[in-house]
Length: 87
Image 1 (spheres, rainbow, N blue to C red):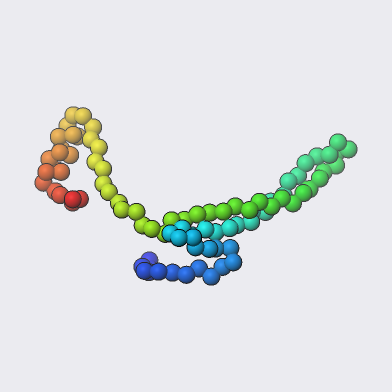
Image 2 (image 1 turned 120 degrees about the horizontal axis):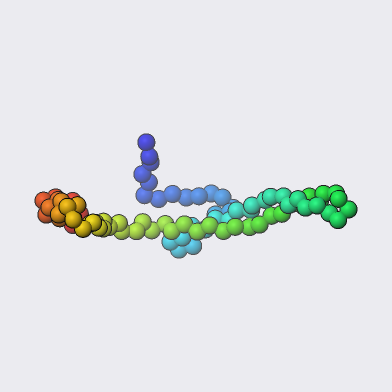
């Protein structure tokens, strides 16, 4: 079951709030391996900082109905006249 909250707070040194955006910073660490000219192997740690942004405002949602020509179009038009689910 999901939790519905009006507000929340993130307590992390890698997360900050900028207006209506939540910005998080992540250090991606990996290792590069390459063969040397002498036939040996060189292993080198590599780190890259990545920033993610998430909008905190919930956009308005809409509904679009596209129809195919022919019998499908006729049945969708009839359904739209009889059922007004989105106004």
